[in-house]
Amino acid sequence: MHDYTGWIVRSTAGRDKDEVFCVVGVDQERQRLLLCDGKRRRLARPKLKKLGHVEALTDEGRQYDHPAIEKLKQGQALTDKELRRALAAFRAKEV
Image 1 (cartoon, helix red, strand yellow):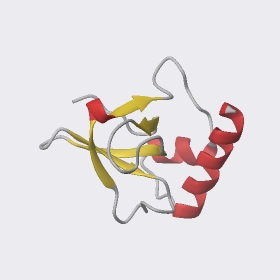
Image 2: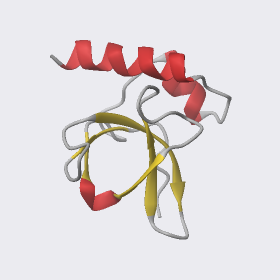
Image 3: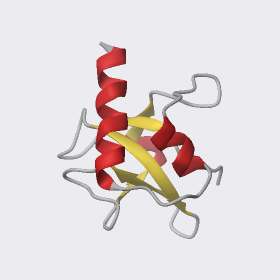
Image 4: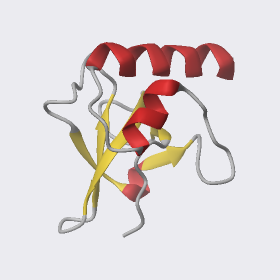
C-alpha cells in the first residue's frame, strides 16, 4: 500500500461522513488509513478507515504546505494542537 501520510482527506462513509481528517499513518496489514483531526480523533487513538471510504483533498498533485503537515511527513512528533491548527487553516483556505 502506498504511503498516504500527510494527505488531507474527507470521510465519505460512516457516522463521521463529510469530516476532514489528516492521514497520520497506514496500517499495511489491514489495508487501512490512520486518520486524526486533533479534536475528536486524537493522535493517541487514530481512526482506522478503508481507502475507499475517503476522498483525497490533497495528494501528490495537490500539495498542502503547512509546517505541521511537513513535520508529520518527516516523521517528527506532532501535537494535537498543531494538527487542529493545520486543518483549520486548510478549511479556511478551501472555502
